[in-house]
Each structure stands twice: as structure tokens, then as C-alpha cells.
Image (cartoon, rainbow, N blue to C red):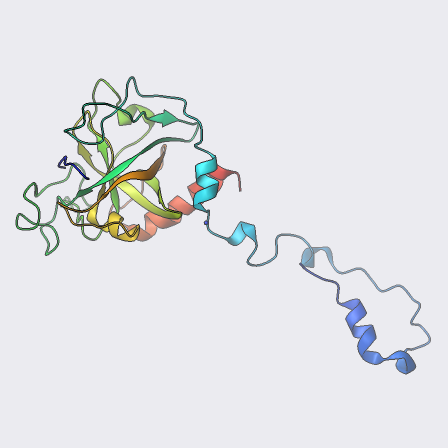
Length: 246
């Protein structure tokens, strides 16, 4: 990690059948009550309804409007910021913070992330793949959390490498994992791939965004293998539905 400046009915059919017959074709038994539609065809939400739709940014943000602070203090968003303004807040099922997004381009050396594109490049990440290799920032959406310190220890909040995080920016929701750690006094960083997913400039030195990012990290939610994007997305959507009470 480096620190730098910038930077989701069924309708009745009996009447339709009668209408197709026309008035002259009605049988003498037309007045006999039509049996009720079997219950199993009338129970449950309509396909494509709210229960089937992805959880929205609005739904998630409604759950994190107030803060029950769990951190002992607040974090700075960049090394050159003298004022600490970001607390880590807790709910029963998650912790969250609202900050900026600096770009983490560490780990596996790629065309996008290397010493040529990022003068702060480091060839390792705090957490590794299932094969013991550094994570690929350019391919895996992940979040950087502050190293354990006097302000907050992510491990005491039920988080670890591979924990699922819902990241919200400008009405978009993306699911990532915790993949790296950074300085103990700074918060607000995501991988190159996560920035791309959120339409944030992913360039490691001039990219990122100065504000407007909400991170919701779900407790006891580790994905395995950590590098599985599909696993994080599936688990994230399930956890988000529970979080908003779907």
C-alpha cells in the first residue's frame, strides 16, 4: 500500500377463458363457481420483483446513515492530511466507513501495476491467493484496511483477509474482499480492479477519488479461495440482502 494525495402477479385466468367463448357459447352450467386457482400458483413474489433484484446502493446506504463508532479515534484519508475525519462504525453484522479511494497497485507484477507505472509499487500483499502468491490488483477487486493499531484492529471486528466488502460509489454497488493492509493511521483504498469496477480512474499515481466512497465490511464472511471474484459477488449479494432485511 501507498499513501498519496488527491487521491440494487399472478392475475386470474378464469375470466379470460369465459370471455373467449362469447355470450352465445356459454354452457348451461356457466353459473357454477369456478374452482380456486391452486395456492402454489399464487404464493411468492412475481418474477423480476424486488426479491429477485440486486440490492441497490440506496438500500445499503439507508442502513448506514448513523454511526455507532467502534474505532477509538478517527482516520486520515491521506498522509499529508493533518486532520483525522473518518471513524469506523459498527452494526450487528458489519462495520463501515465513508472515505476516499486511493489506488492500491501492489502484489503481482502486471502491465498495469509495476515499478514503471507506480513508484510506490510493492511486489507483495498482506494476504495471498490459495496458492500462496501475492494478489493481482489489476484483476481482483479488493479493499485495503488499516493495519491493526491503537485506533482500530479490524481483526477484533470479525474481519480478515477474504472478508466480503460492499463498496458503494455514485449509485453503484460492487463486492470485493479485504486483500491488503496499509498504514495504521490512514483509511480509504481499493485495488486497481475495484476502481475500474466503480468507474473510478485506476491509475496508481493520478487516479482514485477524493470522497464519496462507502465501504461496508461484513463480519465473519470470509470467501475461499480469496481470489474468487465470483465467490465474493455471490456471497456479497446474499449478505447484502440479509443486511437490508430482504
